[in-house]
Length: 318
Ligand code: UT7
Image 1 (cartoon, rainbow, N blue to C red):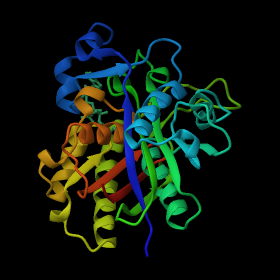
Image 2 (cartoon, rainbow, N blue to C red):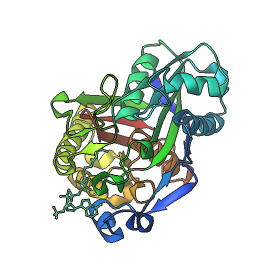
Image 3 (cartoon, helix red, strand yellow):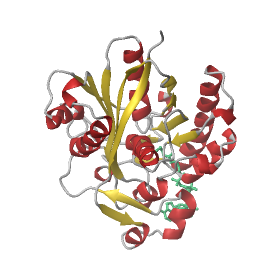
Image 4 (cartoon, protein in one colour):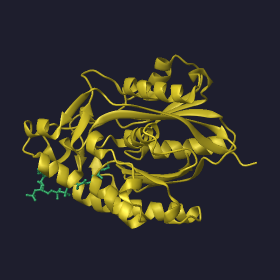
């Protein structure tokens, strides 16, 4: 009998502090109207000073574990997708493991920009389907406010902080149907934080060529969505829900239009969360499960795009 990876619990965490477009108007040469028209963003959540990525991950994880009614000690694997780890090393996944009070499971981080959560889900699916492991915690957690240059209106208005988590386990009922993961290193410089290990002179904040990225995003996402449907012999009309990465409402709209998915079948959180990178899909997914939109047995397509550049999709039956 075929084994599947099934999502058995979800959880999310958004920091309490909300920064609105009006707040940004007081800090930068920008306007609520520009931000809403170009991006769909109205507000974003920002961490309290000193908060760490593993702390956001912990709250989201505990909620996902509670929803699944699972003892964290039974996890085989913890993966954290993040671009804003607590430290260069150890991994945020190891800090999360410590926070959860568990020992001796595999734990590491994935860096794939905003596609990190989709990469993690796709990769863990391989471990589970081949029988290597039975149960895993997958988290997308980001504190982008730490790597945003608050003087730069091109990027400061776009990002937010948050975390989302899922618990997955092996099952015999359909779960993840396929994942499709891509990267194109030729585009490393269109979205990046140049500063890093070995060079203290380079900028350690987000740099983005937004216009170029926008075009590549729409093309890549449309392609990966077609690839996913084809691989599964599915028609566009068979999708119940699209859960896209939340970078820009206009990108989401363009991909939904190409897919012929009406916007009321797309989970959209960019207005309230802004772009939370690898946290955006698990945050949106958790919200739509908890408010009753996404139900058991429905088909969900997740798709993401981000720095690298990376892009990918996961098709699943919830
Ligand atoms: O998470 C994955 C990666 N991220 C993305 O996928 C983001 C992709 N890109 C985008 O979402 C859009 O390109 C942006 C939202 C970043 C920008 O929207 P745009 O429609 O591409 O605007 P633009 O960059 O062409 O800028 C238009 C104008 C410029 O002024 P001029 O040169 O026309 O006079 C900018 O200087 O808007 C100006 N501008 C702003 N004005 C007010 C740029 N940022 C702002 C701002 N407030 N915050």
